[in-house]
Structure formats: structure tokens, C-alpha cells
Amino acid sequence: MRARRLASLAGATGIAAAAVLAVPGTAAAHGVAMMPGSRTYLCYKDLLANSSTQMPTNPACKAAVQEAGTTPLYNWFAVLDSNAGGRGEGYVEDGTLCSAGDRSPYDFSPYNAARTDWPVTHLTAGDTIEVNYSNWAHHPGQFKVYVTKEGFDPQQPLGWSDLENVQTVQNPPQEGGPGSEAGHYYWDLQLPERTGQHILFVQWIRSDSQENFFSCSDVVFDGGNGEVTGLTGGERSSTAVTALGAGKQNTEAEAVHEGHENHESHDGGSSADARPAPDTTPDIANAASDSPMDSSGAGLVGALAGAGAVILAGGTVLHLRHRRPDADQ
Image 1: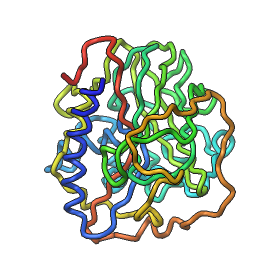
Image 2 (image 1 turned 30 degrees about the vertical axis):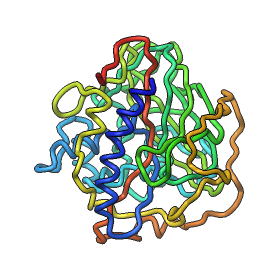
Image 3 (image 1 turned 120 degrees about the vertical axis):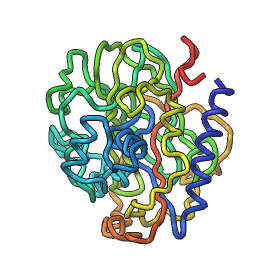
């Protein structure tokens, strides 16, 4: 397990280092799942694989770009609502969960499309996985993890009644330093018993502001080990997906979050390698702070437009336990 982690982190560190060297100004980010990949993240990867045409080959990704352009994908991490304050059902309308209720600075509405040809990550029901979520910018809060219920129809719009909250993690521990894709929050998650195609939905609820992040990851429970299909070039391991576009600079990203510069751990600790056990109670109440936003969101939309800055975004990296051969080897 440790050898796998070191190999995965080494590749991610190389990508992050190349990007950081290209940043002329401030870089900051976090946002959506990277493994199992969210729709925006995997479509972004497919865009990078087809940079000469600026058009993904995946049919669902292509349709989204034709509707909303490439700007949302270059800002794939910004599926956010600056004023969500931990609110979910009854606030974010059914059919808009994958676009943060259409309250993001960018048009992510096409990524709500109910279709079965999004890029998909293959998993095994009942497996225990270690979830890694980038700590590029540290924020206290909780990660609410949902999986659609058995019998879910992926050709119908995603609604709250389709989801089961399978885990809520409060202030998970972290490993590695901020400002690098190698640094991450981590916790164990046992996947529920499911068959067929589903959506893994995550809401990251910050407790130091009203800002929340949302992501939809298409997964299929078919005995898989984290392989991704539906991208240019056919089936790819998680390592190969991470490597897609390595060395390419995301100079098209337009925004940077204010208040993320020079962040230190909110719990007063450093980016230590110690691994205390996280609190993974399944039904913990929302714990968003009532403190006002530290940014109206205007800075997010325009702070670095045209500056050529590289914006790196956090997300989830998932590692499967050694219950079957590693797809990355």
C-alpha cells in the first residue's frame, strides 16, 4: 500500500512542480473529485488529450463543451456555491447537483446531463478504499459522501432522493504539504453494495466560510480496480489518467480564490506525516459556520483573468486495497 502511495504521489508531485514553476502570480485551488474522477475533471483530461482541436472525444464531454465552451473545463475545480453554508436538499434543486445549483461562476449546467456515456470509473462493491482529497489550500470542515441508491437510473436527472449518505468525514487528517498535488486529506471508505452504474456525489462544506464545493463522479460497480473508460485512447489506469496532459500549462484558467494564499493548517498543525484516525461518523450534522464569506466571489471570477496563471485544483485520489491486482502496475 505504501509503495503504491509513494509511486502515485511521485507522479503527482512531478505534475504539480511543473505547474508551479509556470505560475507568474498567486496559485490556489481546490474543488472536485479527481479519483473517482468528477465529470468536469475527466472531461478536462479528455480535453488535454485533444488539445490541438480543443474538443474532447467523449460524447458527453463534447456535448458539454459545444454548449458551454471550454472555459468551464479550464476552471474544472470551480463547481462551487459561495453562499451554500452547508445547505443541500431543499436549497440545491434536483437536476442541478452537478453544477452546484447553477450558482458557480462558470456555466457547469451541461454537466448535469442525465446520460450514460460520461467517462466512468470502475469499482468493486464492498471494497474498502482510501480516499485522498487534495489539501492544496487548507480549510476546516466536512466531506459528505453520497452514492446513488440501488436501482438508480442514470438516464434520469440526479435528485436528492436518489442519494444515500454513506459517510461524512469531519476535518480528516492530512499528509504532505500544502501547495502540491502530493499533499492530501485522507480517510477510509467502505463502498456500499451496489451493482451497475451509479454516481458518487461529494459536498465539501467549509466551516470557515459559507463556500461549498460539489462534484459528481460516474462510477460502475463491476469488479473494477479504479480503471477509467470513456476517455481518448481507451481504458486507462488511475496513474495514466493523472499523467494525461502532464507538462501542459493551464494558462486558460481565469480565476483564483482570494484568501488561499500562504495558508497554514487551520487546526494549528503542520503538514505532518502523522496519521491520526479521522472521524468518519455516517450521519454527522452539517457544521458550516455562520461567519460571513471572506470573498463575495467577484475576486474568484476575475482576479487573474488574462494573467496566464496556472490554477491547480484539489480533489480526490482514491486507492483500492490489495484485494485484487493493482490496475496501475
